[in-house]
Image 1 (cartoon, rainbow, N blue to C red):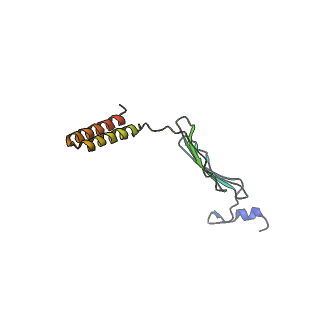
Image 2 (tube, one colour):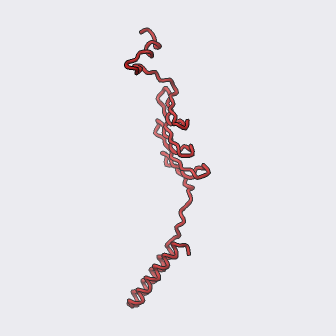
Image 3 (cartoon, helix red, strand yellow):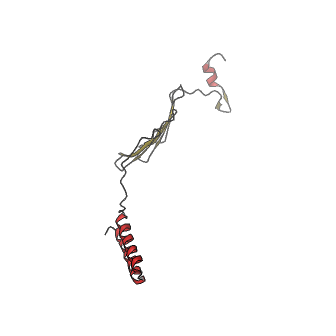
Length: 139
């Protein structure tokens, strides 16, 4: 075998014995997005994509990585990376704070403990429960 071209042609049972990779080496998913890319010097990148084709994860051979989330308009609403840099613009859940409820409940318990009236204690806890239900239902 005198040259590289002859080596490329060698096969055993249909499998090339000396596959030659041409650089840059690229692998794409079924949507045409690059999921792996490598240079001849060994530097590589990996990519993952969401349903809308947005890149949700990137990693390279230096150890750097970044994760992203997107809203329905394909805008980045969350990202974090291996350097500790993060941004969170995701919508916050509509959970009302229970702090006013907790303070009110503590006051009712204090009244009951001082009064030692079981009937009043029962009433206070019923009211406390109703107030919690109201807070959860945004009333």
